[in-house]
Length: 295
Image (cartoon, rainbow, N blue to C red; front, side, top):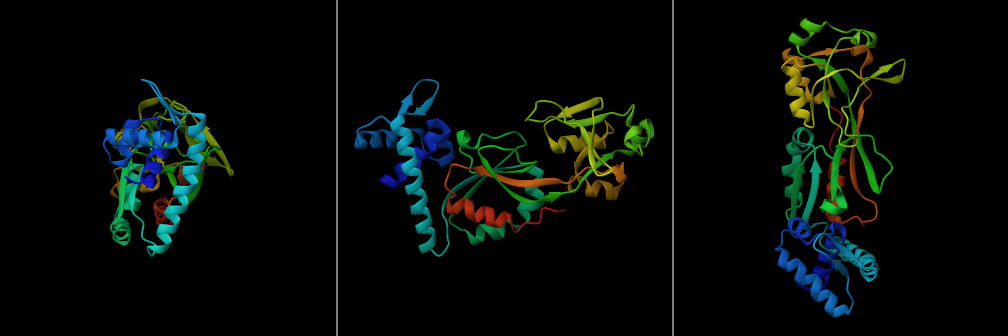
């Protein structure tokens, strides 16, 4: 293992504060990770990490060395990509909501991977908030309004939203035509990982976003489960329209409050602000920009 590889390992350990998570993200044995850091500390003659049974954290010297390594690794990766004719190599870890990935990314993913044959793409699925630095994730793709944070948000598109319900539900509770007619209705709600509370229904009324908090018959953290629950007649549900296009066409779900449709939701790619953009992540973001996140 050369010094450059040791630097890459140290960067990931310093970011994740964990030898185990670093080993998992880089696909290496944990013993290899700890040996690399120990060799680096011996060569430099300083302690780079404070190790306890609960946490691993950079020392002051480790923080300074982290910044140096970050710049060096970024420069070397950029230079290698330039002289390799644009080819990139190595592992890229991304986290994408499963339905979003299957609908917008997977259909053209083979073309992307054929163009980058030395790239190993590791894609996890989820809706929860991901600590990119600590978990060793390079990028997440989410349907969300970007918030001020230590992450850079690259907007990829907007998704039309809709409110739907099953015919059996509407037969029982009635078809609401205006927000004022939602009294007595129930919702299948998505549990926000940001607030820990069920998300309210949103509608546009005279150009303004209006929210309604209705009784919840079922709350979930899974978007697909939420749609399944709506099909079973458990309540109204608000989702990006692409989730339910086939259900609407087949009559399994019916759109309601169409004159008060929710505002479209932005699709964004989020990645750490304080980490130099690697060639691997750059080509992935450029590919994402060619996807049409509008349906």
